[in-house]
Length: 61
Image 1 (cartoon, one colour):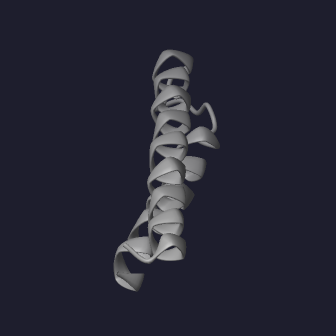
Image 2 (cartoon, rainbow, N blue to C red):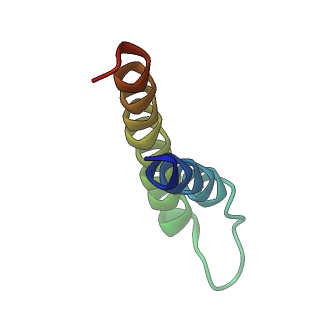
């Protein structure tokens, strides 16, 4: 159970990392905006999953 929560936390941090990708010669602004959207969605989805695990553990199910 705790390993799953840590995995979700790592996925949220990876999503944050995707939102902070800088624009370089290799990574264009179009790809950067795509990474920002994917990173934001990852943070939202895995944040909700972590909240679900917390509520589930709090209620004892």
